[in-house]
Length: 100
Image (tube, rainbow, N blue to C red; front, side):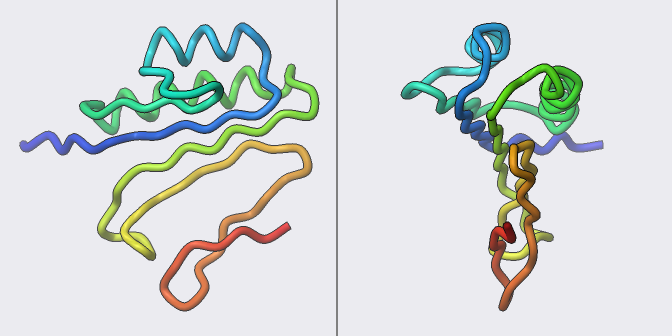
């Protein structure tokens, strides 16, 4: 079984210090609210997203977006969001777009 490793990027807005601390511990903070990890497995990425999803109901007026390369997805990248108001990701002409 081969392990695929891809760059993962997380972008946050108005999150608590708890979330920022967790992400800074897990990933490199390149700029305020922008985190990246160049060598992260899908299993680790999923665990990070699960923690963020579990904590998100305690956030107020916040948003979190996670992006990673995925050749099977439109535009070659996959994304997931947690936000207030909610944002849906849709495929539009072979690319990802946001629907508000």
